[in-house]
Length: 381
Image (cartoon, rainbow, N blue to C red; front, side, top):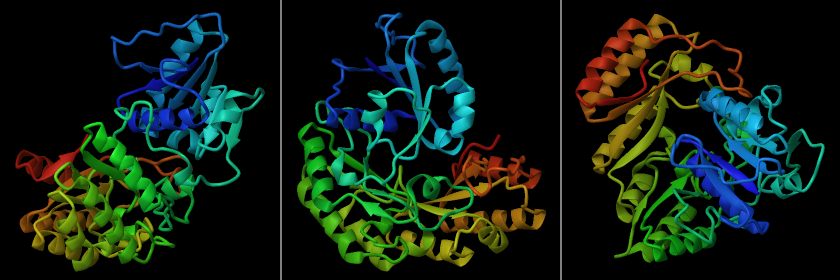
């Protein structure tokens, strides 16, 4: 039996795993069981003295919770094999082995998961080639209701120093084909899952060969094809949660495509800082002016910009923070909302050795005041 360990923050990964396992002939309820270890209503009905495969997927902030669950399960299912993958195991494989996992998958699992389930004496496993997204469904076809979003692209050339995406998926973008995306969206609509949402590190880079230059033809062809199958039947949400767009990709042409074909009323824009010095230090490769321009264009077309901002970098000065506050004040006055994040040093990134620091008092005061007015959201403490 394969047990997929579900938690409150890995649902999309676990549902995608269901689709991957179906490709290799493993099916839910027959060979695969979902165990929600945050729910008191989920019980494991498996034999304790047999060999089972427990699969975990988690990010760094959830690592301790998963380690605790691993310890509990290993004490009960002593003959089983415990496997982990996802962003944290990819960046810190030895830490995961030291905490008790038997096998760690680094990077993408699709091409190697079947070999892992049929092999012995493996420890750290990594695929020798990147995955072709068209070769795997984004959700289980046996039950499409196990679907949240459709992943349309992987890989990012920008290599922001705080982010794991380039380290996990590489710098060259790969895209699910329009035909493939439409096929799976039609399946969702047929199953009354009519709000279509997509996963991409930068939604407006869809179809781009290098992820730097916009492929307007591919982007419009995708949205036009989706609009055709959803007309009167569903809604398209693009460039909004769970994806975002880079500010330099926001222009009259890209935003007009959203207004023409999509249903979202907001757009997620990765701004990150109001300090040019910080933007260079974190390798964002865009300017503060790009953030302001992207917000103005979005508002002009009736889309509410939600601007991601990160603070708590140990190299941030008081002057840098004050510039970020000033940018946020300007954006809020324009009509934007701010999505605040605290810097978290992630394993495998250029910033993994940096320390996390508290927000400066003036930033905390500003954020608390704006949260009360509904203009800021996110975790402050």
